[in-house]
Image (cartoon, rainbow, N blue to C red; front, side, top):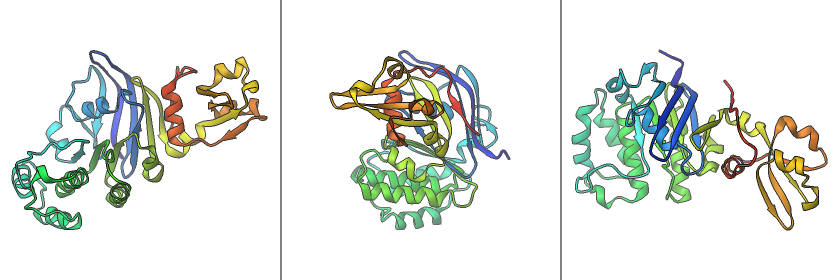
Length: 293
């Protein structure tokens, strides 16, 4: 079996008001990858293409070493999905939900499902419509764990969760990949979560790949440059990504390999949030994305 859990190569998709262009990235087995970008960057479209919910126009997607279209049923036996909205029938109980879903999975374990419900403090008698946002997320995770999913795909799972629930989710994800055989693709706009758990980051903007590689490499790719208004030369203004100006000064991103030209300025290590915000604001064009590994 492939050492990569997920491989996306040269994938493109055109929608009515959006195009995903030549997308390529790799998620190695046993790791967590964060998929980030501003609203409309292409994160959900990418996930739908991986799940074959949208038909790609070109390129290849391989999940666990299998083509995602030709081997769709086999792959979906091994994928768990947590969306930002509940997709279960609200009138059903949790027990009804298990009865409806379990026949679709060859490796479904009632014991694992029951044990996970206990761990998550969920009762099988609870109605789906009565579950809070956090409870719905835990139920979707329980389903994924109960059929031994090798790849967990999460689309904005922490949106609307309180800090305690978010912390619990992150601990679950770290536990989930411990055996080195399971992986997570985690799409979120709450980038502080990724700084804690993500081994790899893929950054999208306007349907284009800006960066893919290790989290460490992303944070080393840029500096956050700061200065006073009179220090903002025309040359520097043209080089800064996502320039932010106030009457007190300016800041923005510069490529780390250009930092020697600006030793007189304050140069800080950016957060993932700084990088996403500055890239989404624009400025210097990203004609070529950066890829590592």
